[in-house]
Length: 374
Image 1 (cartoon, one colour):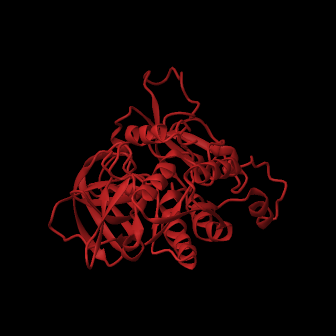
Image 2: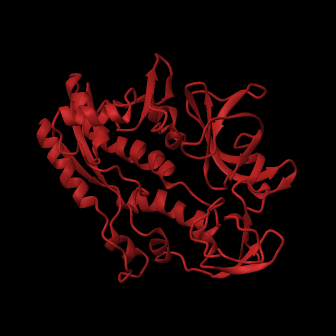
């Protein structure tokens, strides 16, 4: 059985590759190149954009070293056009709406488990594999996406938009391990990436300055920062640069007219181009108890109205008990006890115990019947 693994040049995919080899699979690796600054800037008609060099080449060199250490063939493939059309354009369109998108969710859906699979099939693969902290159970007629054993690293949230057909031919070799166990295997195996720092940036942006990067593609429209009762207390650089619940980078501390408490982004007024802020981490303006979601995707089976499930409204969030009702085939209303900073544009991911059922993209957020300001 032939498996082609996505080798990113990081420790997780490196260990996944070693485990597949040890288990006796006919295995190859494939490095994906999804972003090219010069090409993408030319598409925009602005080849002189000040865009830092993405560290992809260093990652590719690391992947080469690991593949060579393990005696595995490494393929290299460009998905630059596919990424631009399916992920980056989505990313930009969401920011234009002043929503907060999650491009990693779409990258998995359209690139890592779609374009990658099509290329792997052309190379004779029966399965693809990724270094995600997730598990899969393949039954005769159905495959189930299960949480990774390491609850702190579980990545099923980012896999919530993949399909049953995509999951059906996927493997996750490290999903049964914790991060420390993965590191130890890498060290015991003397893999080149054993001590490599984990990547924390968005997949195509990396760890560069996010605001500076976004300014290259979307024009900023500065405006007023106002309190929840309408008082102007500062200036913002552009609504798209701020997320609901954000504390850092507001530049409005030390105002003697207010209590000495931290300020948080509580909403956005698109018509007036105002950033709305309030004091206190748990401001009532940041709390909701129901929301609407669309772009629904169910990986193995559709949840049943009236049954209680759990959901995450952002990555690494604790599980929240939910109930829901379907508005139509592609929209649902989800009910939950008070949750802070549920944000339009982010994924809501629904679980039935250990099984990740899928979910949707958050549209509108409410506290009872009162729509939140975002």
